[in-house]
Amino acid sequence: MAESSASRGRRAVIIGALMALLVSGCTPETPKPPPSSDSGQTPAPSGSSRSPSKSSAPEEPPVLFTAQGDIGIGSSARKVLSSIAKIKPQLNLALGDFTYEPGIEQQFCDMVTEKLGSEFPYQLVAGNHESDGHDGDIANFVKCLPNRLPGLEGEYGTQWYVDVPQKNPLVRIIMVSPGIKFRDGQPLDYSKDSARWRWTADALDEAKSRKIPWTVVGMHTPCFNLGAYECQPGEAFTNMLIEKKADLVLSGHQHIYQRTHQLGLSRDCADVVPESFSRQCLAETDDTMVQGRGTVFAGVGIGGVGLHEVREDDPEVGYFAAWSGKNRKATYGTLKVTVTRDSLAAELVPAEGSFTDSFEITR
Ligand SMILES: [Fe+2]
Image (tube, rainbow, N blue to C red):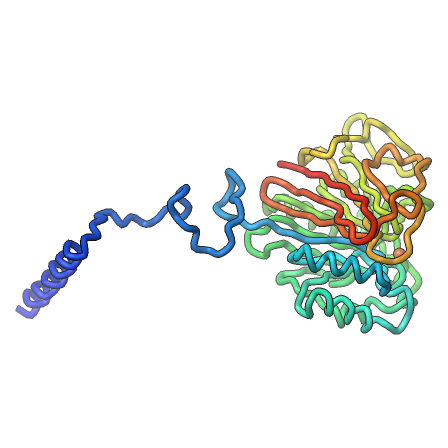
């Protein structure tokens, strides 16, 4: 009995609702769950209206980051920071060499946070000026510009990686410190099959196995360069990065901009040998490349401190696609990298001077 009165009540509610619908004249009889992004008819509720990248997942925002090294605390450094602020990246990779003098770590950190905000992920890896503590100490920089990215693994400031965004990442960023001396006067061991070598190789392999679309490796020292430096990270370590098909390798140290073509290993190029040139090691030589053929190396030591000269007669010059320095279109600035599921696009954004460069790798 109680049951039948309850069901009567329910029926009354349903009839009432139907009547209300008819009266209000809004008929649509099939409210179906919206397929979220039907072309044209939905005004996209979720804020920004970025053009959705054709095929892939619905409305996946790109990852935008900047990178540069060799910064100092002068006016050019401030201009570069202002240009980073204008770009509004999600994070910045500072590729080492921060103050070039001891005792003013806090001043550097204040300069950064004044321009970019105190919560901005201004992510550090040590340069040779602070790795052994002689021109400021990486331990102090790490305190005043701490890691701000969730899920970071490893030792922040020295050897770490992070996936961005943390959920459904588009890129794994791996920062390492080969070829520079630390507090005991010794470089960290990145020799073949050492623990740090393995850590780096595993981070690259794991990114692939987790199907993270892109890998970017950063460190202070460049292997290939248009100047006097030898391959400080080591030939074997560098070739491992190429073999593992890291998409982009960033460095500073030399105060110039120097960006290679995509370098790749093959039957005709078993190893990219520093201080020489082999055409066989060029995987692609235009500015639109395809992922998986090799690695692009970009030296971005133009973050603000005095520039170096480019040596265009360097034996490695054939590997390079673009460069600028004190004697060639002197420019300070930052690399800006935009990562989507389908593409990694990089652009040199000048802050002082006018040299630019851009390249893209697609999948
Ligand atoms: Fe430097």
